[in-house]
Image (cartoon, rainbow, N blue to C red; front, side, top):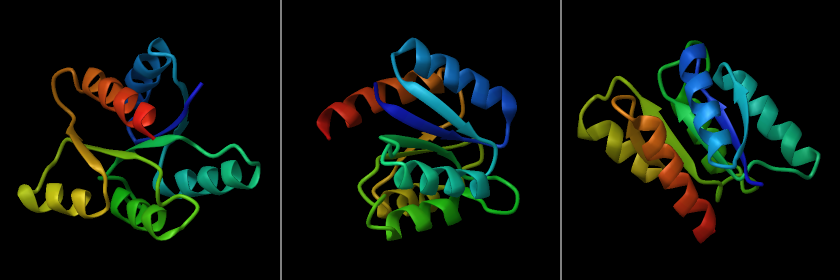
Length: 128
C-alpha cells in the first residue's frame, strides 16, 4: 500500500483527503503544518519506510508549503517523491510555474479536488 503524507492546517481538508485516499487504497498520514511534515518525513526516512507521495498545502502559518517544497526538492532522499500542491489562493500563473519548477503538480482547492488528487496520485505512483 502506498503511503501518502497529507499536509494542511485545515482539519476539515485533512479529513476529506484522508477519507478519499483511504477509499482509494492509499495509507494516508497527516501533518497539521510544515514543521510537523518535515519531522514526519525525516522519521519515515530514518525508519526505512519513506512516503511515496505528499499532498501539500501552500498557505500555512510558520513553515509554509513553499518552505517544505524547497526542503523536499533539495534533499536527495526526498527529491524524487511526487508532490501534489494544493491551495485555495493562487497568485496567478506565477504560483503554478513555481510549483512546476519543483516538479510538483498543482490542484486548486475547489469542486471535487479530492477526486482529482486521487486520480493524479494513482497515475503518478504507478508510473514511479
